[in-house]
Image (cartoon, rainbow, N blue to C red):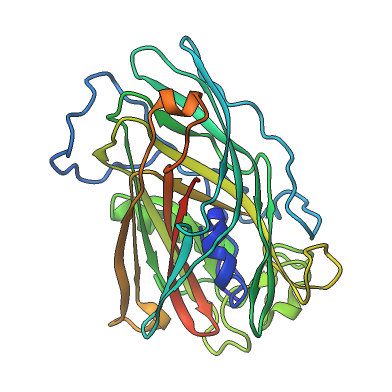
Length: 370
């Protein structure tokens, strides 16, 4: 059980392992972000004006999100990425290099890397805009292999089309595409999920960040009882109950804030927003026959630049922090992308989960194309 956090994919991979141990619902609202402080760049920024980068878009907390049939990942294409004026970069399939692709789990007591993440991610970048060298990019399909988690079951990732706002690729560099997430287990009391969200938005604003996600412990997210009180996931059919099973501390507003900005990106830097919905099944294959846990759709920002994460007041203890963690990816040039040469393209993300069976945790997603 958890609160709607930002897994997939990539959280798909991140969410992959621990969504099995926690109910997570990430619902992100699209709004302009406030860039973080700019450090001296490693390479000169492009002098052309760079467009602002929106937070990944998802339904508001009162929505249940797109209808997704439990089972194997779908491959419904997203709308073609837009952009214009310059050459269209087109579609590319990234086949994950299992030897290099992984998920790392961090808690107060645990630091564990889970290797051999396998699957494919289909990207589609539109026309390069003159002057900025940027093009919009979408994820049109994703197919991540089920993961056997002993004692839990098989984690099944279903791609969700149309859930996220487009990301981007910057062919000449300079766009600030670092992703910096701050997760706070407790920003105060709340009456329900609907009341927690504006409190979280206001909280993020006071620290020069944008709202990413929120949830009020003891209330359902998604499903037929969305927004109603609960004590376990069983009380939220087709959804999840924010907080631990049989929770003793209801009405806590959990809040996540984000900054997409930071240092000027390298040539070919990319931000990808991936939509996914996760199920846990008792047995393979992922066919919807024996689903034991259903998590709401989520949207995950992955970047070739730096992904940072910090979880404060971990396990509802004001003195405990998990992190900070940072991981940097690796872009490829737009010429290589257009020629379908994406070997070595490395996209990374940080994401948190509150109230898992082993406590709050921070997950690091690290995917490399072969």
